[in-house]
Length: 404
Image 1: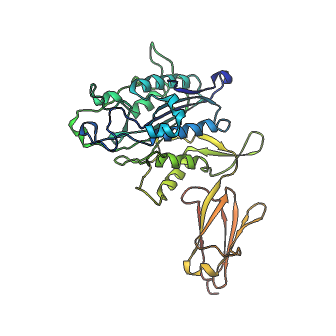
Image 2 (image 1 turned 45 degrees about the vertical axis):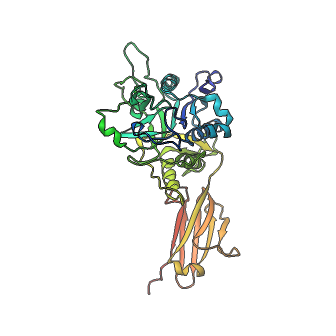
Image 3 (image 1 turned 45 degrees about the horizontal axis):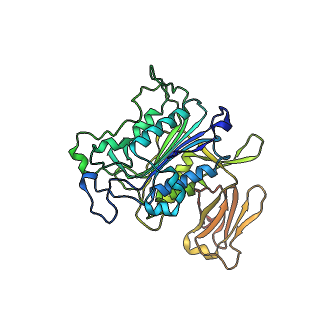
């Protein structure tokens, strides 16, 4: 199978680019199906029905974002193990089938080589599938052939830390030179982080080593790690649909900009940076109304703030304006204007009067908000809405004027 889904190296002529590595494993060859008995020997895990779709949708986002990524898109590896229902829904996945241990090690080593010759390149790693948590500081990613009865369990999984540490700048004496490896690296791990009780009977569960353990040079990477859930918790996905985390990630990538910057030609640009992306992801996962809760882990790794891509325009943001105290909201008149051009963008004079709290779609910009109540006076403020939990909300706090 062809795992290098995108190869633009011939067009870049040595220019720094983005090198993506994407894995999605649903059809675990040696695990039982959802209607079959569970097997304690393989941690009671079952085949899945959403990771391959999730990975493919992330691949589609990468492909469609070329031209707005931090760097030109150079290469993208895609390793999939789709369930039959996923393959029927997206036949193109058949071109990238194969996410066994041998597939993973071979392709991830090629990915590292591609990332290894230009410090200004950017590496993006995405994994969706089964995972376990051996201890708080490391996750183990299970590969397609996990549970092979003719091999030890740890021979078909890889410690995430082995990948992360192997991508540090280093030189192996007599080996390959990775001192010029991409300094911007962004990792997304969409997998459970539970510790199966069966691990208690094992002396160790190291997984295979895709990379040799290295002593890095001075590690100057900006390399944030997004884990979809906290240690001890599960990650979720509906049958044949995108996982909860990846669905939120794709939504966040379309709106997680907190400020415009000036581009080289003086025009505004709207960057999506890692730290604010994490805040928006946390907000989107926390506000889910249906299904089991999923708590995103704090950013880990070497937490710089690399830019993933630039939005084509100022993002639209779901916001909420509430009046405090609540019982005076009906008698409060509110007007929101753009701060620079003074244009009215929303008012409670609209008929019929919207319900309180007021749900608004606002573009990223600076606004002046003015609220007036006949007995409580006037509230004025500057509002810079953004898509995270705090800046997407505005509380209009009205208080009685002090006696003179």
